Image (cartoon, rainbow, N blue to C red; front, side, top):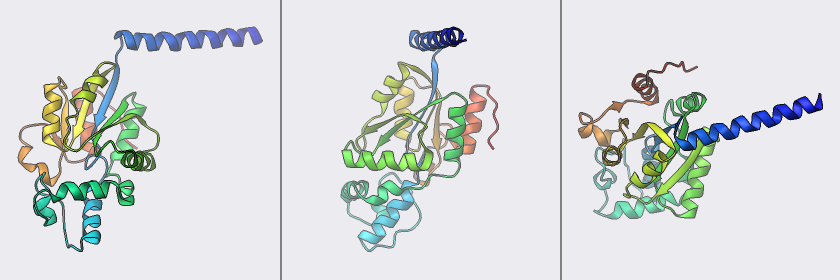
Length: 230
């Protein structure tokens, strides 16, 4: 009995190693979903609004109607960069809420065999990174293959190309149109822009989704998959 069990363990280990080698050799590429974080899976805008109203004694309402935050926040040109850095170092930045459906759909995607990668433009500062990782774990658990960090305004193409070395990217999801254009230029065919008030003018240029339930449907349609979300 002992010999048989030991033999089974060896065979199982051999299969695992073979499977990984197949992925590396490209015969059965692993599949990935790559996502932005702020206002894509976490509600960045609402918490930023609360932070600014409290710290600067303002009465900001709603969400920004443009990528430039100055008009929305009622501040001088360029002051938004300072405020974003202050916010990203605050405890509030580590306490963003998940957007509707994000946790349920991302968990389902992992169950369907997808590796989930995040590329977030919130700074490479260690404190900011720690707050972001803790927030993501609190909202979604340990479901992410990797979280990559870039600076504000930096292109995500480098990390998209890095992911492409090992995975077939079935969807890239972001709320910033410029990031999606970068992804398309990097050869990512399946890009989805999650709707936010600031990206309304770009919605006729790319595939859009209202929420994560619609994103799930689009991915299923593109790749001829079917699954149910409980």
